[in-house]
Image (cartoon, rainbow, N blue to C red; front, top):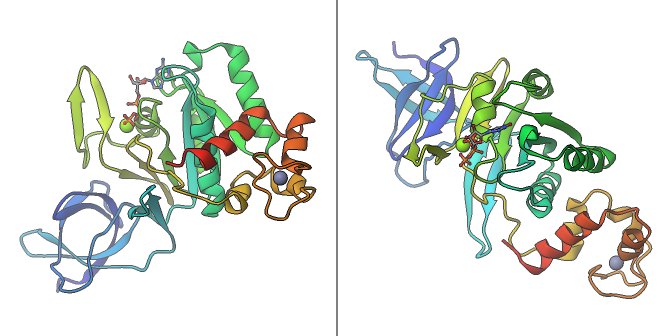
Length: 293
Ligand SMILES: Nc1nc2c(ncn2[C@@H]2O[C@H](COP(=O)(O)OP(=O)(O)OP(=O)(O)O)[C@@H](O)[C@H]2O)c(=O)[nH]1
Ligand SMILES: [Mg+2]
Ligand SMILES: [Zn+2]
């Protein structure tokens, strides 16, 4: 009796978590078993084993070891686990309202690169933006080898292409507040009402807690739009590998410990001057090094 059942963590609160049991559509609330010693805190994307008691009360018995954990790193060196078992970072950038900041997108892409996550570049709000800007950004990131999609979750345009692109993946939506992450989540079928912990104000709904939606074999996590993916203080030699087009020209740097910021005979700066590295990518690299978040 009360055999263990497998479930996926959808979202978490203080002492309970919403979990989606295999074979069930609606998530249910599960209590966390009190444990002495090591902290027992599941996050969205965790696979847990639960016991359903006679009164239908559900208790989480244990968490399966994580294949990967998405850690938030802060400038003061602390870290907090945001989600587990994610393998695809879906970066969301609005083409307008809020206006796109290349450094924000480049920082997310560097994060994915350094964490060995695949990345997908999504642009939203094409209806509010200059088509030339849209074309320029799509071209820039496709040239770097990223898949770039322009989606309008409100009008439903390109939502199916996005669904195909994340099929079977363990994906997480990331981007600053107001870019349309939750709109995408809903357009793909994510239940806004389930496990939601939202603040309501001035007609805006800001997501405050990450939550997961099962999408076939995979899942999609909607995350709060704060700067969760800062790289903290990072050395140039490490950040170089977050910008996938940088390491090759960097082989021409005169100094092996070149920071690519001010040295003479720098392969990276030469590539920028020659137009082989986009100016905006180089400015993002500088900003991340000089103003860590
Ligand atoms: N015009 C237009 N509006 C959009 C589009 N996508 C999203 N919006 C609107 O942008 C606003 C913010 O969208 P959300 O989905 O809440 O943004 P979010 O990224 O989840 O924001 P946080 O939860 O605060 O991080 C909403 O009013 C959406 O309706 C779009 O493609 N075009
Ligand atoms: Mg949101
Ligand atoms: Zn250099």
